[in-house]
Picture 1 (cartoon, rainbow, N blue to C red):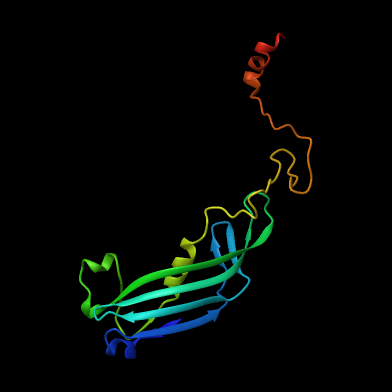
Picture 2: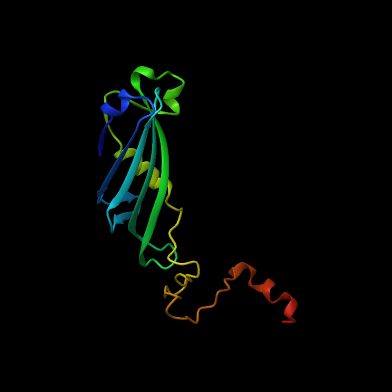
Length: 169
């Protein structure tokens, strides 16, 4: 989404609100693929501070992801706030280039920045519920639906004799 800030830059202290809603293309992250089930709804408030534009935003959507334990697909609700500072190129200095976002014209695209904030909100692993038991490492059955008879104790064959040591065998 491109934002035109020509009017906003004319008066210091002014505020402008932008809203948009769209379904982004799926995002591939390694083996994981994030598919948007609902539109990404974004609301942005821009505040002209005189020297820069402060962006306060809020976004929400639902994505389809796979549980890291049981591998089933489930909807994951994303609802987050973000904040950025955009500085016009004519007011920027070398010190600010590392911490602030710089724009050159009165119109700039904010899509990439929203995507960055969205990715920062994702957990390391998606888990469908805190009590998900996952898959059995031996037989592969989903332990949420079926109990298996596999033993959970793995003994290294080189240490098997030590396991019998104190049992009188």
